[in-house]
Structures are given as C-alpha cells and as structure tokens.
Length: 403
Image 1 (cartoon, rainbow, N blue to C red):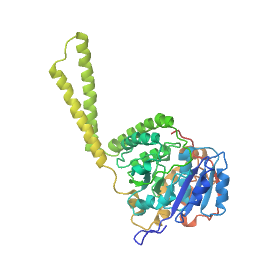
Image 2 (spheres, rainbow, N blue to C red):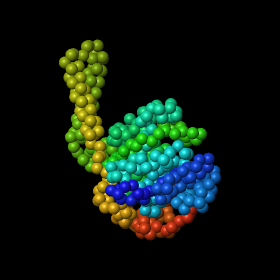
Image 3 (cartoon, rainbow, N blue to C red):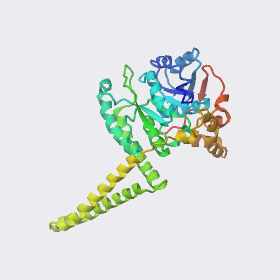
Image 4 (cartoon, rainbow, N blue to C red):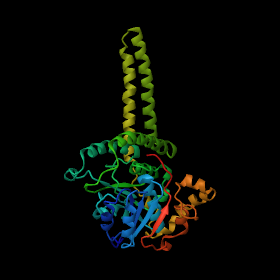
C-alpha cells in the first residue's frame, strides 16, 4: 500500500472471520479495495455455504485465502488464526473486518492512517461521533455501549477511547507476536480482551470515526449475554491491570495513592461499623468527635483514589510500540525481524511435545512443521511466502476459551 513519499510502503491484509455469512460474504469480498494485498477468510466451521462461496470468489480474486476450522472457536479463535496467517504472509498491517457487511471498506484508509504514520499500534472504529449517523443504530446498542465504554476505559486504562465493542479494527503486525493469546477471549468478548491485553503491552490505541451502517443482517450477540458476561470479565481485567501495571511492573505515586485510599476506606469502614454497632446495642448516640473521626478518613480516602484515577488517565501510553520494534527502519524490516520476535517462543516450544504445544499455544497446527504461528513464521520470511491462488488451508481451531 503506497501512501505518500514520506511514508514507507506497507502491506495490508484483511482478516474476515466468517460464520453463517452466506448472505453477505460475497458482497464484502467484492467491495475490498485494491490496496489490500491479502484477504484472509476464516470459515469458523460454518454450517451453511459460506466456505463454498468464498472458494468460488477465490477463483476470480487471487488475493483471497480461505482457512477452515474443523470446530467452531468463536470470533476470537477465528481472528487468532487469521492473525497468524497474515503474519506468515508478511503483512505489515492487519485489519479485522466482519462478514456481515456492516463495515464500509471505503473507511479502511482512514482506519489504518494512524498506524501507517507511526502514531498508533492499534486503531478501532468509533460510531459515536456524529449524532446524525447514530439514528441507524438500535437504541439498545446505544445505551449498552455507554455503560460498556466506561467499564472498558476503567479496565483497560484507555480513557481516550469509546465504542469498545466496535469490531472494525487494525493492528500493526509487529505487535501481534507480543500478545498473550491465552488472555484473548475466543467469543464475543474478543474486542474488549484485545484492549485489555494491549494495555499491558503499553500499546498506543486510537479511535477513528467510522459511520454506523446497519442493514438486514442480524447480530449474534444478545443483550443478556452482554450483561451477564462482560461486566465480570472487565472487572477481572481491571484487577489484573491494576496489579501488574501499578504493583508488579512499577511502583509509583499512583500506587501509593491507591494503597493509601484503600487502606483509609477499609479502616474507616471497620471503625465506623464497630462504633455504630456498639452505639445501637447500648442505645447511646455516637459522640460528634467519633463521627468526625470516621468522616475525615473517608474524605481523604476518596481524594486519594480520585488522584490515582487522574494520574492513571495522564499515564496513558503515547509512544507507539512499532517505533521501538521497527526502530525507524523501512516497513519491510518488520517481516525480517518477526523471526527474532518469535524466537523465544519457538525455543520454548521445542521442549514441548505436540499435545503440550497444542495446549500451550492454542492448538493451531500446520502439517508436521510444528507450531503454525511460531515455527512457520520463523522459518518462512515474508518474501519467501508461497504463492497462492485461492488456496484452501484446513486447520484445527484454537483451543476453546470461554469469553
């Protein structure tokens, strides 16, 4: 993909997870712009004719590569398979585009622009910029997104983003090997779990305005599922980020504010409950001094926590990881450096048996050559990636994970 003279040429791959998409997938493939070098479609064990339609389209478009899962792994599992294939092919930027036709391919240049210019490692769509375009969004989705957006901000530390369930995303390929795939949700929590994992890597995430577009397609994500699973998963992600970012990898003034605020609030809760019970049992009014003694720590504790939140907002990453990984070199260096990025992972894998590899690395296996997403990527540089013309590659899906 050629941008301008000051920006190096970068190769773009689009990954499309497909399940029960026979009604829309052909139109999505036909609308793919010429700047896309590879179109990786992952048929996630779809029971309809999705795979056959994609295979037929691949006969006319050599950019299309069809991968079929033998078991259904969810959108997250399909995307991980697609990410691995895009990295193996030598893509510099990998875009996620759904198969339901809701994502306008004409917005793709705007989506990848912050990554191309080195301002971000990961970009995502945001449908909540202009109110005139929100009229096409169902009211339930709008209300749900408000609550989920705040919880995601709190859990991930990305206070500058909104619309966290938006699935129109792009990621720099150099960041993909750094992610802990075991922490990536395989089901509908995939997009949010990506933000949680990227926050631990201190990757830069940017929102890009993408208009909402809804047609006859139906969403597989129910409101009940969202209310039941997302808040708890975000709470776990928040606790994990808080511990790792502020107490394991660093201990700063933010950590002190958190400790001081929590200690004061817990202490005053115990102190106040004890005196309230004693006063109630004896039928004697609590002295004013005791009440003030309990109120002051509450005020201080809340203030400490507010300061901690403020510093957490100010501490968002601003330097993109790709600048450190690529080191200012030409974008083609990413493909050559990918074996180095994955070397430690492959060395650890050699000591495991094949069943252990499947359990530890998600179970995506490619023939007898070892781990699909480490060994193939490490031994097959992007320039030497085998040509394909609508090839169909069958892979067992990544190990199932709830979420």
